[in-house]
Length: 108
Image 1 (tube, rainbow, N blue to C red):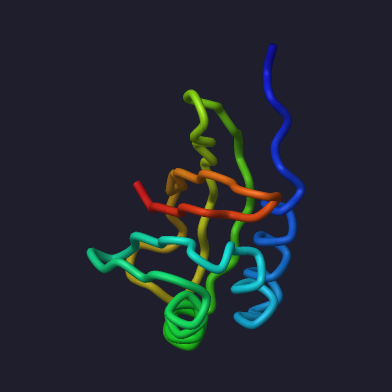
Image 2: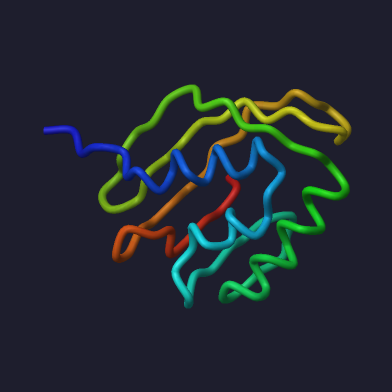
């Protein structure tokens, strides 16, 4: 049986597309970990700073393409568009969840 995609992922995508780092950072648990662009961000304050920087530099938007569960990890393929070289790109986000929030996020 296929697990449902957690609702928080929809809120994450909406906040990304609205270029709203504050709302986006609230999608993460207090002790969440993000791995992106070769860096690790821990906890909401660092995640907020990461998204403020990424939003200012790239103005990204996400369009979900498909999802696949691998154990407790959700592999979410997204079409990502913005002001970065190579846009648009298809990226895979690896996500884990805790208490209805994103607890781990990695761009694969």
